[in-house]
Amino acid sequence: MSHSTAHHGAAIDLPDLMDKIGDDSDLLQELLTAFVEDHQNDGQRLRAAIEQRNQSSGHMLAHSLKGLAGNLSAMRLFEVTREVDDLIQAGRWEVITPALDRFDAELARVLQFIEKQRGF
Image (cartoon, rainbow, N blue to C red; front, side):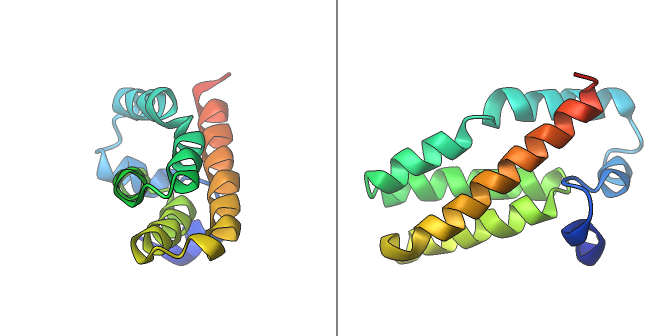
């Protein structure tokens, strides 16, 4: 997978994702729909966990989303989610806000990209 291409390009590296799923466009639509339905509010959930200093909940959410981002070839989202997860695990609450802001921005970019792909 080409991290450098995805890093500066689209929110989701569609050629890479299509390669992973065997060019199945129906499966692509199912994956994108499920991601929006299940994860569009993850930014709010993550912020709530961080505000409550809930390391366990924050880590589980960030770790899960990090894996999904990688599976969807959303490498920038993967990278910022890994950064947030690392800060949560280290208990570095005082410096997490900038990383969380980057996470929110990238999640919004991925969701917007998916909406365009789904024809909304």
